Amino acid sequence: MTVDHVHRTLAPKPKPGERPRVIIARFHYYSDKEKILKLSRNKGRLYYKGSPVHIFPDVSPEVGKLRGAFNPVKAKLRAAGINYSLFYPAKLAITVDGIRYTFEHPREAEKFIEKKIQT
Image: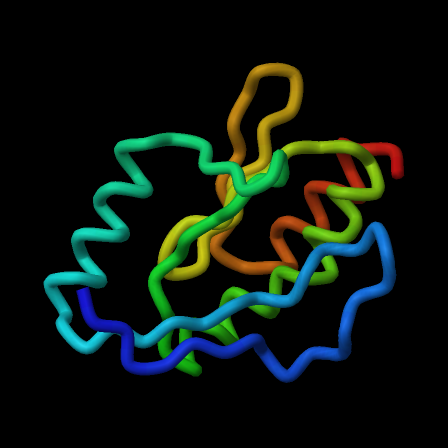
C-alpha cells in the first residue's frame, strides 16, 4: 500500500474535549483506497486508543456544500440528543420514536424539528 500524502485539515487546533481535526490521506492506487473503505465498512466500529475512528471517502466540493447545508440542523439534533445519519450525497435521516424520517433539503428538516421536537 502506497500513501502519497497525509495531512490534517486547516481547521484550528481543537480545545481539550473537542473533536479532533479531520485527517486526509491520498492513496497512490485507487484500489488501495477502495480496499480500505471496504474493510472499514465490513469491520463496523473502529477504535484507536479507545476513541472511535471514522473513515469516509472524499467528496467533491459540490457535494460538500450540499452536505454542509445540513450543519445547523445537525447542531440542533446533537443539542437535543437525537441520533441522525447523513447519507450520500446529501440526505439527512432522523430517527424519532423508532420512526425514520429522511430529508433531502435542510429547510424540510428544520420545519420537522420545529414541529416535532422540543429543543
